[in-house]
Each structure stands twice: as C-alpha cells, then as structure tokens.
Image (cartoon, rainbow, N blue to C red; front, side, top):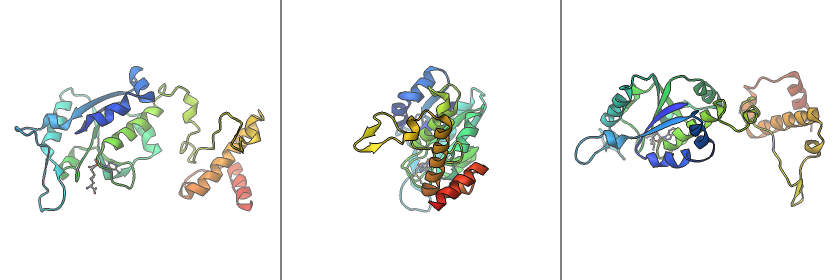
Length: 242
Ligand code: SAM
C-alpha cells in the first residue's frame, strides 16, 4: 500500500506508524506512507488553514486553498492516485473495502478533516468519501490510521503468519472464534477440552460452531448476509435447540 496523508497533525500518525506490524511493513517496502502538513500549503503570515463558516454557526471550517495546493503539489509527480476524503458522511469502511483497497495499484491520498470539517469544495478532489463508523471523531487522522492498518494487514507478506488473517472476523462473513493460550486452567476457567484433543476435525467443527454462536449473539445482522453451508445450517439449528 502506498499513501499520502494530508493532515494538520502528522505526529498523531507518526507514533502509530513506528510500531509493530506497520513499522515492519514499511521496513519490508510493503507500506509507504508520506505525511504532509496542510499548514505547509497555507499562505499569509499567519499560515491560516481554517475560517468561520459562511452563514454563521459554531466552529471553524478547513479552507479549500491549502488542501488544493497540497494536491497540486502531490500531482506534480504524475503518479496515479486515489483520493479519499475521511468523513462521517462517507461510505462505511468495511473489511470488504479493506480487501478492495489492498489490491489497489494507485497511491492513496487521505484527506483528514478537523473542526467542523472541510469546505464543501474539497469534496470535488475526492474519488471517494469514507467513514469508519457512525460516530464523530475530532479529526480524520484516526480514520486514516484505521484504514491504513486494516489494509496493510491484507498486503501479502505484512503479517508474520499469513494464515492468521484467513480466520479473522469478517473474513468468513462471521466473527472470529474464541482463542485460548497457556495456562490450561486460569482462576478456575478451563480451556475447552477439544482444543487440546489434537483432533483437527473436531477442533475445526468447534471453532465454526463458536463463530456461528458468537455472531448470532453479538451481530445477528451479519447472519443475514453470510453464505451458510448445509453444515452451518445444521449447527445453527442445534444451537437454537439448546
Ligand atoms: N461536522 C462534521 C459532520 O457532522 O459531518 C464532522 C466534522 S469532524 C468533528 C472533523 C473531521 O473528523 C471530519 O472532517 C473527518 O475528516 C473526521 N471524521 C470524524 N468522524 C469521522 C468518521 N466517522 N469517519 C471518518 N472521518 C471522520
């Protein structure tokens, strides 16, 4: 994944990008993130980036000029880019979006809003407007990080164990099954016997059953979309009878 992030607060991203999987992905050349401070593209002695809204009302709005200038600067290298405006009003970001983005050849640009958001004319720069959920954040930086993180995990070679993403929540359309590690008994809570049985078929069945149970309990909305096998249907009818 290659991306440019336009933000007023690059340090928010720097801290996260220099740890763990994202750090290693950059070292391996699988992730390339360049941070640009929108203020560097402002003009005037005060380097103003925001202004009061026309029509009155609370808060400040990010001015269009610095963001357009930043985009003009990025476009000088003629690299093909997909521009994402982060916004609570955008299309919901899902695991399926992360999968699509992980196959994207173009370089991403993430525009992070602040305050009351960006001047409406900034929307013209964007190929897509994306929301990470139905809540309002203070700025787009966390949203950009969420997307970069979720997409990077899907880039081949980014995770230590490639198999770990195959079973994760949403990859089957279901939530993930429960995980346990040592000790086998902790404060009276025991690891289910099947997981130490060595019987891989039984373990697979138990995990599938637990994933179905958990999804049914926590996210019944997902059950409407998932493609159930005949075995899943049988497991579900057993669960419902319990
Ligand atoms: N006034 C805007 C509204 O009600 O739609 C909210 C502005 S919000 C306080 C400031 C910035 O945070 C937005 O411009 C956007 O970049 C970012 N942001 C907030 N919530 C977000 C979300 N759920 N997904 C993506 N970005 C978000």
